[in-house]
Image (tube, rainbow, N blue to C red; front, side, top):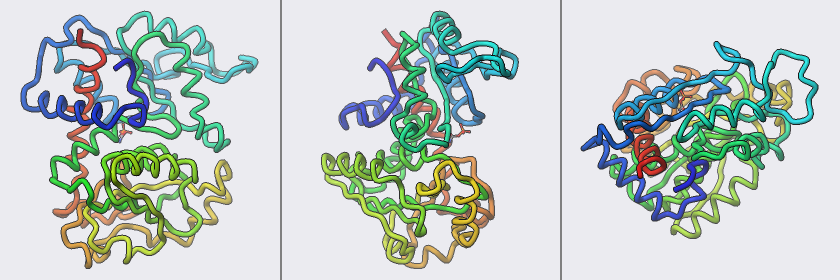
Length: 331
Ligand code: CP
């Protein structure tokens, strides 16, 4: 494996092999596997789980890591091409990234969607530009439309819980005060489709995912024996569901227009997951990648109750990260 930027770049068998390695390293860590190896971490956006799990994974495997958060103790970095750099950024990624890549054996980068131009974000324009500057194994730590490390950990969580391959996976929209990026819903959608699940995207009118994401997931589902559909009917979607994967995201039709998005979401505050939603799905588990706003996206009683597996999901970020690093860096 040369890089880990998109679960969709891997064959299903390669993902299964990574998951097997994650389970192995969880049971039986290899404390010297990556001795002398260095992981560089470049975070343009905040993180708790991704940052900590990457650093701990390297430490547990005998390697080390460094973290750069541009503008916080290091130079602010410009990543747009063609700009006159007379603002806050003192350095361009065209200089800075090859320098960082030269210091390490692999580089992980988090760069969220710019959130202005849907086509550019769907094409991963900014992340692709960064990737072209790096000649080392690259890990996507969340880009405009992807979060493969989260997706791998989520697949492991489904396996750990014994959720059947063909089980119903409901990717459910939840309220948030503002539009959030599409990276996690896109990654979760693709992961569940590739796993071969019956995927139902449950969202209010106006919050359908971009057709390109659904099309890509349907292609993955077709290869894996799964299916993908959308609905706004909560009762129908959740009846008999195995998993409700909760996520907040912005309206595609109002992409880059905060006021238009706010008008669309204003009447949707009741899209906060509550226990009574599960009357027809008593065994349904609730997943969320975190961070989550209590009593906004998910009721506190659900988060604290037995159907919530958010802590297990977060725990699985570590063995998943270890597996990715082991596969990229172990000779
Ligand atoms: N789920 C996730 O990526 O968490 P962080 O944003 O805290 O890294």
